[in-house]
Length: 249
Image 1 (tube, rainbow, N blue to C red):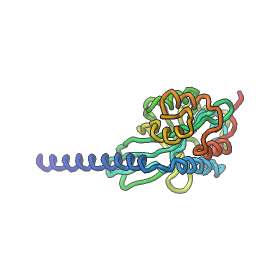
Image 2 (cartoon, one colour):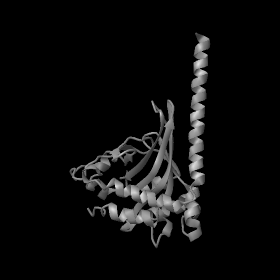
Image 3 (cartoon, one colour):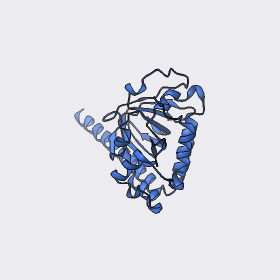
Image 4 (cartoon, rainbow, N blue to C red):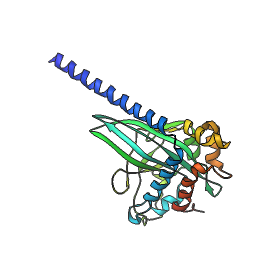
């Protein structure tokens, strides 16, 4: 019996290693092969439009008006057999000077335990409510649901504007894998600044996000300014169109 238990443990460990290795390899491959950052920005713009396209299945207008930053990560992939992992890359922008900042390229990575058979791809949108969000975002990495509170986002554009969303969570999360968007819990996922992508996207334009350093990312998320490079313009345009103007009170 002990031998059988030991064999079972070895098989479980081996499976865990294989899955972890595959997820890591997928994340690295996705990152390395993503030479078309403009396509990532266009897809993120499209996902944001899809989020608000169905009035009774979109985030409340009151919540969107209070949004400090918005992140869109298309095609987050979850895979695993007993032990799962997530990986995806997208963009984030914050309100700055009455408009939206130059977006920073970001990544979501992490693992979870559960009965996750096969693989699944989902589009993820994160609505940041805390005024310190630009500083938090620029701080290299943090754990969603750990250092920063996250909750499944409410749905329904006509929900009461009196609800104090900011008192409930720092981030509200939405996801769509099939059909319509829904609020989803993604605690345990790590947020990271995609420095390599920022360097590729901005260095050639001589922009202040060259190299994607902490300082330059934080500065742009807080202040914006000037005409952003064309590679990220679709995402900025989608934010202007789909996220209501900030509340003035």
